[in-house]
Image (cartoon, rainbow, N blue to C red; front, side):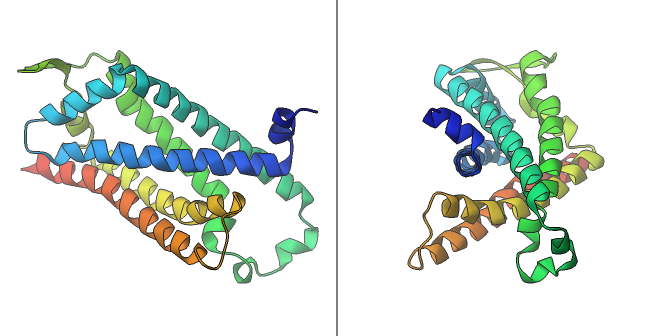
Amino acid sequence: MSWVTKTFTSTLGRKLLMALTGLFLILFLVGHVSGNMLLFKDDGGQAFNEYAKFMTTNPAVKVLSYLTYISILAHVVFAIILGAKNKKARPVGYAETKASTNSSWNSRNMGILGTIILIFIVVHLQNFWAEMHWGGIPKVTYETGEFKDLYSVVYGAFANIGLVALYVVAMAFLAFHLNHGFASAFQTLGLNHKKYTPAIKFIGTAFSIIVPALFASMPIYIYFSTLN
């Protein structure tokens, strides 16, 4: 059996792939939230629309996008497989013990958190990614050229309080998911030592608060901006 087959079929290999895809998606979140911060720029959407065009036309970014899609699917599939295997192997008496004394709420509910986040991703892709690629978005012209006006699409979408609420709730679930997943990924990779584990946990906690908060701040800001 080759090392590739072992990686995809063994529990250890699947956990390793879960960790690697999770860390890749964490890097993706950093880039994504950085670009979305341009929504706060008071320039009528020019910087954001130029960023959106770059992200959908640059060949290198397209390759990274495909890697992101693959990572999301792999992360979900391996999570389902590992969750089902753990449930099957779990003793009956385990359900009667107090799980809260052995693990955090985040770790016990990673499957639920991940499922809700996956639903959010589908809604997000439908509202913006699909619209950017195939929707009838109006175009705007700047001195740098002609661009699809995704900025106006975003502002139109977040004028809906229901969608804003969905995004804020989803970001809260993402925070819980990241808070456990960040440190867990490093532990799976063997980077678990008393000297630097506390630093990893601190960075993970900070990341799980700051990044989801930044994502959530955008729809809230836009919603109240549309009320003026």
